[in-house]
Amino acid sequence: MTGVIHFLLNGIKRRVTEVTPAMTVLQYLREREGMIGTKEGCAEGDCGACTVVVCRVEDGRPVYHAVNSCLLLLPQLDGAAVYTVEGLADQRGELHPVQQALLDSDGTQCGFCTPGIVMSMAAFQQSGETATDDHIHEMLSGNLCRCTGYRSIVAACRRLAADTADAPAPLMESPSLIETLTSCADYRDDNLIFLTPCSLTELAGVAAQHPQAQFLAGGTDLGLLFSKHRKQPTALISTSRVAEMKRISVVADALEIGGAVTYTEALPYLDEHLPQFADLVRRIGSRQIRNLGTIAGNLANASPIGDTPPCLIALEAILTLQSASGSRSVPAEGFITGYRKTVLQPGEFIESIRIPRLRPNQQFFAYKISKRFDQDISTTIGAFRIELQNSVVRDLRAVFGGMAAQPARATCAEKIVIGRPWTPETLAGIDAEVARDFSPIDDHRGSAAYRLRAAANLFRRLQLETTVTSPVRLELL
Image (cartoon, rainbow, N blue to C red; front, side, top):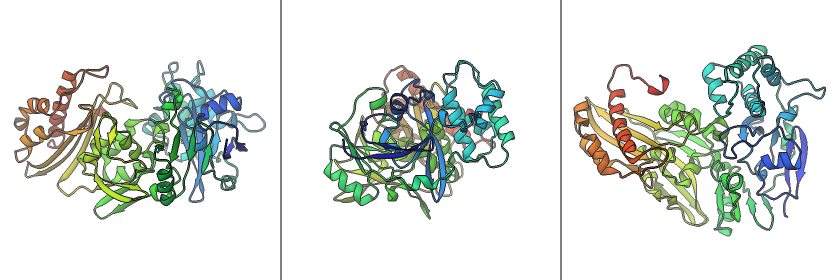
């Protein structure tokens, strides 16, 4: 074993050396620390029973995020503070306001999910967000409870907001303690090397030295290898500390998002410039997932049902790929080459994503069809960038996921629309054109016939929403 992981656990320093880097934070808490309040429910980041709060200092202030400890590897805690349900009550044993609010509102029944809900609420309280019903419901979407029906839990959130109208006391008494922790760039045992470079140059260098390594850009999918499948690669390279890849910039003609920027960090920018993209991101996964996952990771995963690739292709995004030998630019449309395949070469990674800003006559829409509204895998997803002038379609890029081995444009459907009046009559033959574009499969999420009909209907929905005076968002009904 080589390397030392330093972090704070409920305010107390931990120095870990004899733990495999393949151990999840959930395993460590339960097996090594005896903190069994954090539960394993699904082991894939869906149920929220394993939620803990991770704190890092950003721009001199502590920032708290709820995360799924079942998907988080122990080395990812290096240099951070982590809080579990055992760490909320004070030294006299008095309950934390979040715990007291749940107790007073009868927000617990069997109690299995309660610790995770408590930690999600604690992170929400520290965020300073207004406790509107929309924010509360979104915050709770990553915590499944089969007993309460959520009414009492929502009531607890409202009670907490009313009782702590002023800024809540931070979980950390002294955030400067985090800054005293020594960073570990190389932690390994005989089976797994976990590397955490801090600059673009370092990242390119270690990637060249370990071309077989997999990049960990959040780990919300890669983490399943450890939590669910009990498998592991031989080397992991985390991008989370690469400063150059944590940047977001808005320039005259584009929004540029670094390869290590999380969904949560990107959302304020997407809300401002591409609100429909932002709405979609909120459905990709819960806050716990969005606090770890990255757009670049979703791209590199190259899943045919990944949610962001269709959007990036429709928006003509450009990717900057970096390696020790230099950088190159690749359009998002040409990045994914097949099922789980990309143009990335060994040692190469996504440095940044450049999304062109919409022109005055352009609009962007993204529609996700899934069995469950929140944090469910798509049956199909449609992303559309449309340019209208005098009610005529001047340009259209229509991209679908879940319809083929990789996200793809509906080129036949595009052709019958471009240059024609944007009316229902223009879409009379859209079903046949979509069937020419795609030959989807039958699976448990939907049959091929269902996918084809749904994709064709998304064109009709697009036409309706871009022509009626007061567009209706079906998700709000």
